[in-house]
Image 1 (tube, helix red, strand yellow):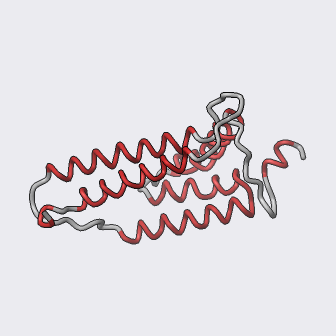
Image 2 (spheres, helix red, strand yellow; image 1 turned 60 degrees about the vertical axis):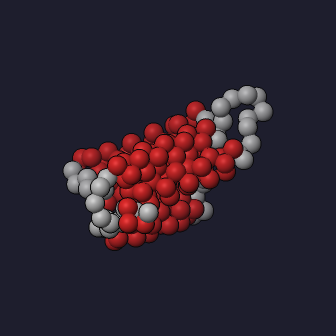
Image 3 (tube, one colour; image 1 turned 180 degrees about the horizontal axis):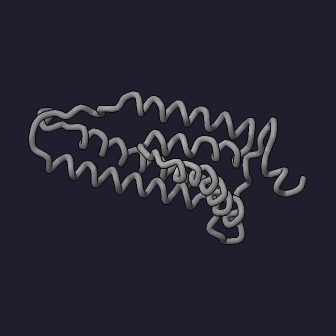
Length: 158
């Protein structure tokens, strides 16, 4: 059995289990009292996508023939993404959602291989604006405000 174990099986199983766990946690978010979709729809949809993609990866790994494969050829990319996630949380805490997302989005795009300066600039502008509109305007989720400074205060005239 372990002779057929490859990276796709390991990653697919991990994603599917993480998707199930995330789905359970997202169901613990209270539903909106007035029946609106509310804040838990995105984590729930994300959990479903993780489960589905994990299942697809697992099935693909079971069809592969051959020996073991390395889990990744890019361990520094994984560590870099983790470092960016930690920096992102810190930036949101100190400078608010808009600035934190605007600074981190192009760095993540760069990490994933996007090098076009216009695309990176677009990520810095569009990601914070689009995500703000979806989560905070349409869904009514409370935005995280910055401890030191928040661009949202300036934009809203506070």
